[in-house]
Length: 258
Image (tube, rainbow, N blue to C red; front, side):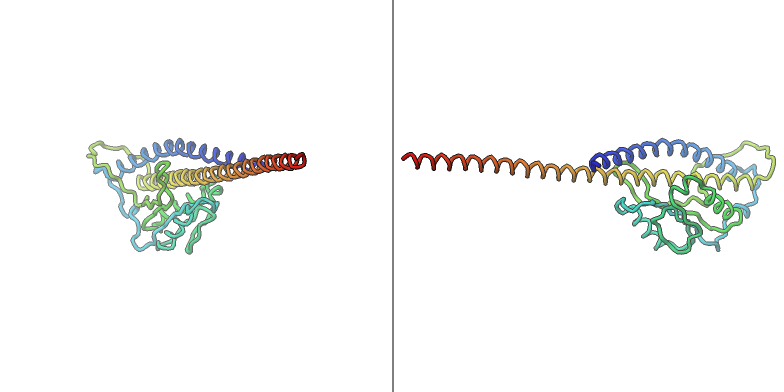
């Protein structure tokens, strides 16, 4: 098996995954923006009378941290940064990534397991919000900004903070339980934020992997160049030895003739 070809394939697939992550992130960001707009309209419209106790978190409850890492351990300090943050934070946690370690974990999943079925995380978040079990929900992950910037990010996603300042004068006709609708929308928003974090984390992981494989290819080039240089040197020395032998033979033959 040609090691260079294997590394090239790994490098290529990592680059493809980064591009795919960008496209998926754009799709989820559109949904996230729509949800936050709808939540904002409901929470800040003076025409709607909400039971604030239903949506207000219990300040005596613990904070939930959702950490996202990697299932693999060869991506530089990708998991190390998250694990160091886990040691600093105080609260309960959800760990997504087999290389993450921490106490008080309510749930631990591998990345592939989470991506195949996020119902366990969604159920934990849903119950936690409905029962007011968490005062805050914060996600911690390696955020892919661009090809030169991957940094550890901590983002509070609950309580939901709406930054738009608008005056709401429109009236509403509401059927059903508005508080429960709002709770469901908040849970959906949180889940989209977690999925977005996973996508950016995956992009960062694959960029690091792509950089690592590129460095490996560069090292292979250096090794092959050294081999070629050594081979050329050996061939030159061999040719030089032949010349010396030929010269010595001619000298010997000329000595015999004289």
